[in-house]
Length: 240
Image 1: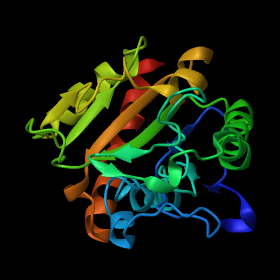
Image 2: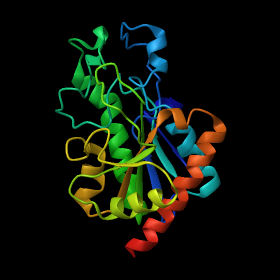
Image 3: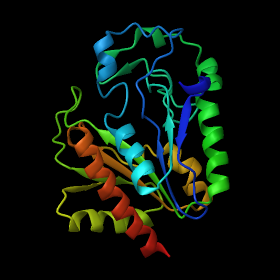
């Protein structure tokens, strides 16, 4: 973490412009939180959204879409859950037991990481008043606890407000991508950060899931940064 903060921000928001939010950008686990898991598990999707930090960083630096990104693993505390959600500090993920989280001091994790992340995000968005928020996630092509095919290259999630998502689904599809809608899970079931920071304020947003195997290299991350920046720029224009 930079300066002990559970988030980092890249770029300066332009008032009324686009911004990007990445809840699961990092697999970092502080030394004082023993999760009791094999180290290699931190390189898997259960620890973070693979590729999203690289995509968001390139969007910020090359496409002038500033980013607010989490700096701790979702195994420490999941920024994309409500405070009272039973998995805000997960005790298992995709069939893996997280023994260090059993009986963990959840309030301490919320106070140290979760609340500073969301408080800073709230202030950042209030100052920027963005025309469009891009909520960036990635999903694994397969899960041990799910045998359902995951063929989509990108997917748009939403809860009650689908205005931006409808435009994005069409525009991604016109690029020849296999586009999902509320896949591999539904935004009506899990949309915590955008429910709080977008829908509750009437702000337009695109919650985008990219399949992880498509954004593992720098070249792939650059490609998707350009694609997302272009599509979301056109979504913002369509919403004017």
